[in-house]
Image (cartoon, rainbow, N blue to C red; front, top):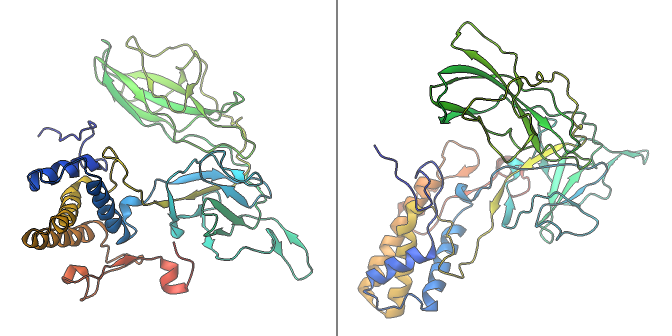
Length: 404
């Protein structure tokens, strides 16, 4: 069966694909036989209203960001996660450069260095450190976090981190694949990677990956998973690749990999592709000692719900998945029918929109076996009236914690 591609060339179903306002306008013009001009500003306003209404129904899972990560600084509790350079001068800029920040999802806030989920507090602590009865205080590993409504791009972490983290990162076993190229015979490779930091220091090598390379093909190695910069500001932003050729000998279970990236380490955003004539041999053996900068601080990770955007141009991508383009169109058509004062069209498009909303809730947000979802009751939208199920947080449900 052929792959079904999106306009951007991505395989539909493997990635989230979003429509544009222009697609809604095109369908609206067809449905109303071009009685409303596509360039009429009221159409863009209607599209904006419909998307905002759909996005307000719930904190949809498709609005949840990828994991965001930063490393704490010694004795500093305040961290800016918004656009780089736009934060207060006395707050640590994490470099995350988030421009579409909505609510942070509480149960995704972790101190990955200590395998601990941080609790959420609503109130700013009087002091950034642990306080004791004798009036002494001390720093420590992060325990709680706070995001104030008036400064949503500043994350407070308490107590002030003591940064007792001497971890030196080592890559995971590399993700390897092949691509057509060259005229080499089939063979088996063993592959390792290392991190190289900003000062040129190199980590110990990763575990081995073993891969079969077909004839007339070459090896492709993906860069190691991105690691935030150390507390000192030194980045783990490059990597080396080490390869061993076992030929066709299936009895070989491990290799003596040598450096294949001999000219210079690769950028962490670059993929290694073996030359058509084969990888460079004769390089040094893979390192066994770790010499990169210690992380120093604690690795903080969280996810957030994207903010609800305003539709201001036909080229704007809408953030409702393309599977529900018809719901956007039905809602916009409903507003246009009201504008044109056509009772039959109003009734038809309202019923289409309501049915589409029900389908969107059912397909995208109902997880009845999960503790972080309260499913609709018998009087809900899925039963034909106007109340929706909504997401909440596990700790809110049972412990009265802060909201997400």
